Every structure is written in C-alpha cells, then in structure tokens.
Length: 193
Image 1 (cartoon, rainbow, N blue to C red):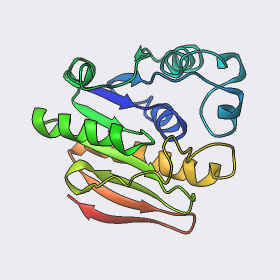
Image 2 (tube, rainbow, N blue to C red):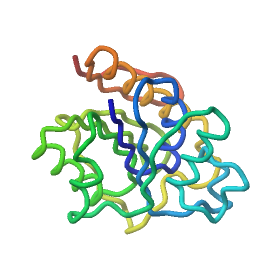
Image 3 (tube, rainbow, N blue to C red):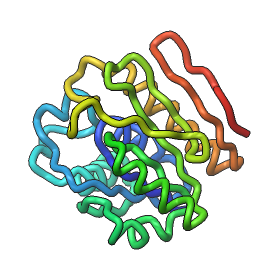
Image 4 (cartoon, rainbow, N blue to C red):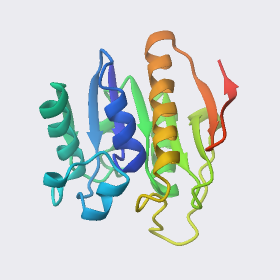
C-alpha cells in the first residue's frame, strides 16, 4: 500500500503522524518550508524551521518513530501530478486551496485512484473528511488565505487530523469510504460505505 499525502501543513502533518502504524509506504508532497509560526499548529519541531515540510516530516518520522517515508519537496502541478501520485493506492488531499484540490480530483478521477480530502472551514468552526466522489472544494475568500495558521484552532485541527487518519486506516484495512463532519462538539459520519 502506498499512501501519498499532498500537503503536509496542519491537517496533513498531524494525520500523517497518526498513520505511522500502518503497513504502508507514506509519501509526503509539499513545496513549502517550515516557519516558526507553523510550530503552533503543525507536527513540526523547532529544528525543522527553514526545511522543506515534506523532507522535515520524513526525517521526524524516521528519527522519532523509526518509520521510513518518502518526500517530494515540490508543488503539485498538471505536469507532475501523474508522476507524484500515479503509483498511489490512496491519495490524501490536505491542501488549503481550491485549485490544488481540483487538480487532484481531476487526476484521481481520470486515473481511477481513491482520493480522500481533509478540509477545515476558514473560520475554524468545522472540518470535513470527504471522499472525492462527494466533495466539492470551496474557493478561498482571498487568494493564499491561511486557514490553519497559529494555534487558535489546534483542538479542531487535532480532531480533524485524527478523524482523517482513522478514515485512512479504515480504507486500508476494510476498503471503507466514510465521510465525516467534525466540530468541537461532535464527530458525525455523514455518508459512505
């Protein structure tokens, strides 16, 4: 099993750490670098500041948990999506923008790849784990709008990442594709098999 996490910021980095026990190859794709402000809401440690997020997460999993992973410190584009995700048995979308989500959806549908999305609302009031066949990404209010910066939404991000990790585990073990709505009051299955 090869699981490709596209975007390893707040949701992706936390969910990936929670998937470290799976018998699968974890692959991280992210062009961004770890900044000091990311330490408040993402799974990175202080020595990772300045490093590429995908590479930093790969090194942390190896150093802290003995888990080997792969990393690609690039932006996913139309030109490389097939090379990055073509060998995936599962693609996990943890991007924070509509264009990247749509690119992954188009690729997954054309290639017949299972794709699960993890997304948080811009105001931090709820999150979704939704399989591609039932997901429509929202546009950001402003281009490049940060939805997971700082530690204000950390409890919700942690709950969402744990729910996404559980959804990935259920898919790997049983082929289950269950959608979930997450807020600080409840985690509610909404659809799926």
